[in-house]
Length: 508
Image (cartoon, rainbow, N blue to C red):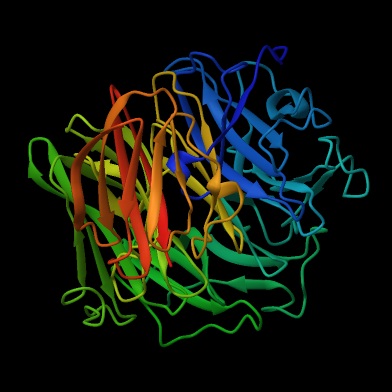
């Protein structure tokens, strides 16, 4: 493990909108070729664990790491070595080999848990760590516990995965029995690695698509709402099926069998109510793409209550919206992670979140810190990183997003975004260093003041993006009359020399 050289942790208030904590690691991973399996998890104290594999060159062996950050984005130096744990070294792998790690979780007792398998068909195992990165000696042998160990049943083990839901740990594995026949099953474990015998058949559920198939193999597990979705393939026809299983009881809904949804990719998403959301891009021109979201009912038909005939399409002049991934919110709304590229002079490339309500409408009070040729875009919140959002961990009032480019030396970037936009908090009223606006909230007249006595211009728009005042040039100070405007959210965009900034204003 390289010695920690430097660490950059900084707070971005992103032009006065939601308080956002952002940090990135650029010390021990400079000039990495690529990252993979990037996953962030949050414990009950708000600490953030970042799990990933990195490769120094295109065909090199991958090295797995876990980094631990405090809730304020600084490395927890009590974890591993200066906040970093090299899993390859920890498990004793030589530099020419890498462990086969499928999944990473943080248990309800705040302990990192890794699900590890071997490509040669060895017995899968769980590795549980203490909060300082040392082996949990109360778990198995030196922190390692082997699972699916019945030698009278299992001959070889293959592809596996783990997901956590309501304190339960669902693990699927494909295996061969003693007659070398392919099989697949799901096990339900507690955080001590013991089967929960009240679920399934003594904690185990065989998955079989029936006599029409020679055998079944699972690909992925997903949790949404109160259900576990297990997607697999029936051979030899290569037909995909999804099993819908109640997390609490283990009972399978045999009436559900979606044949079109593909959970292995990032485009397809199951909402908590069982509806299906598919995201993607449509090319408009050589420099512009629109974002398209389409929602289906559980039976595969288009949901007419979403957007326009089941479709919501977002597009803006001078901007390419590039779809990344969807994350569900408990109230039925959802966030779409994107990276966007602005071809206008007012922006560049940046990662962002879009808030979409359950009916397909954009939540206009969210975001607004991304300008489209000088006019802020309601509903889209730029998070400051440059790459593509790849992992989300959601808490009641905030979300942690990890972004990464998939190759050529980009570091991993993390953003902790406050999702409560109902009112401006104390932190959100911190002034931009180049100007100030007061009072906020405002009733009648607001005062905009430049800090350096220079000349600037401002635009004011409402939450729908409609321009109220445009290109108002002033020097040092300007009074803005809000008295005739209705109560709500407005966006004040200031252009000053080569700088541009936007502030959310509340009109009482």
